[in-house]
Image: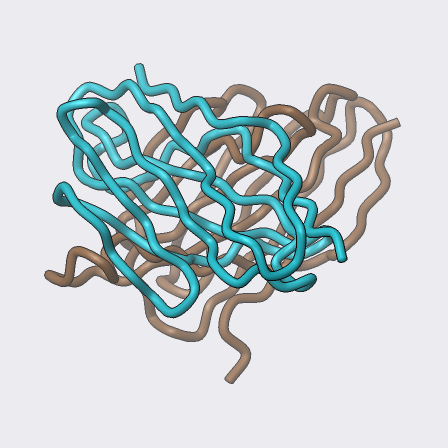
Length: 112
Length: 117
C-alpha cells in the first residue's frame, strides 16, 4: 500500500521561512504533490515534483529526493494568510496511477 | 464559470437512511474523485472515475456507491448511512492530459458536511 508521514503541526513567525517534510512509501511512484487547505475550505493545488530537485513557484518551493522517498515544501516570507493545513500526496501504482493518496496534513500556524 | 460544485453543502440524516451527495463540474474533466476528510486522517479516497461509465474503488469504498452516466456528474450514495460515515466529503476533478503537472492537479469542490445521527 501507500503511506505518507508529515508532522502534525508547525509554528512560525511572520516573515520567516518554514519547511514541511514528507516521507512516503509507495509501490511505484508517479510524483509528489502538495495541497493547501484553509479552515473550512477546499484543498487547492500548490506544486508537483516528479523528478529530484527543487521546483519554485513564487514564495513556495517544493523539493523531492526519490532515492530517500522524501520531499518538503518550503514557504518563504511567511504571511498570516499562509496559516493553513498542508498536505503531501503521492500517485502510485496502487490507485491506478491516477488517484492521489494524501498524508494526514501539517497544520501551519503563522504568528505575528 | 461555476467550476465544480457540490450539493447539499450540509446534511443531517439518521442511521439507516439512504443519502446521495451530488457533484457537478463544468470543465469536462475526464477524471472525478470522491474523498472523505476526518480529523487525523487527511483525505481518503472513496471512489474515482476515469470517464463516464468507468468507476473504480479507492481506499475506503465500503458502504458507498457511485455512478457516472454523464461526464459532468458524479453522485455518491450512502446506501444505509452509519454514524462512522459522519464526515466532510469532497469531490474533485482533473483533466486527462499529457502534462505531468496538470495531470496531478486536482480541483476540489467546496465540500459537503454530513452528519449521521
